[in-house]
Length: 125
Length: 125
Image 1 (cartoon, each protein chain N blue to C red):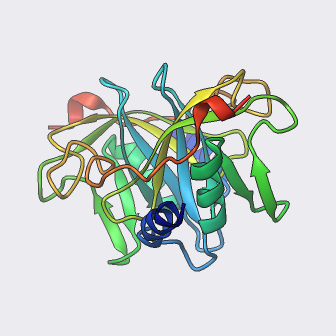
Image 2: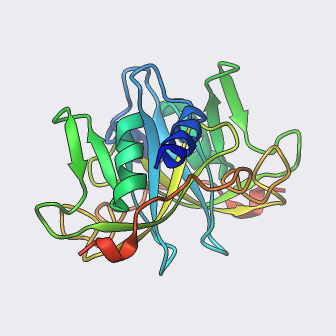
């Protein structure tokens, strides 16, 4: 138990949180590979996520911890959590129950038309 | 041409940049579905990305625009750029030339061991 706490502390210490104490977390479906959403965690949210196995974010709008799906049932069961090369972003592989987005869309990136891409691919050498 | 400018302006206006004028951008391989990296764009970087077709970020450490792969050749040819439901994060599908990470790893999330996941899946009902 003590050993586990130390392992957790050491791992969380390696994350570079921003000046608000937060790190952006990309949630990706471990089944489909779809990018589901981007949200934020502080150190305590990372700890809760790793110890509970359920994605737990920090809500910047409500200033509170937010177990994804706690009310909707659309939980994210965590399969893996990884930091990037410079440790200031996390990638989380999850089993998503139901739609990821509060709009009911499968992902938060399915709700608006694409931005207009105006480059001519033939002009890129 | 003028019509295009208006379409671009309108699309970029819909993005909610943070108080530093930046938005996080998730780059995902359009081929493999792998999440390659997370980086940042300001409005001008979004504009340059959409008009050039090459992923162009704002480097927070160097305070300059950064055409990904400009020196390494590991460019990202943009296939699509999408905002999320609340317009404060972007997902960019790219054709990645070579490794995405400056370490030489295929993605920036391949460079460290996973964080320790300590939940007992059987304990999650």
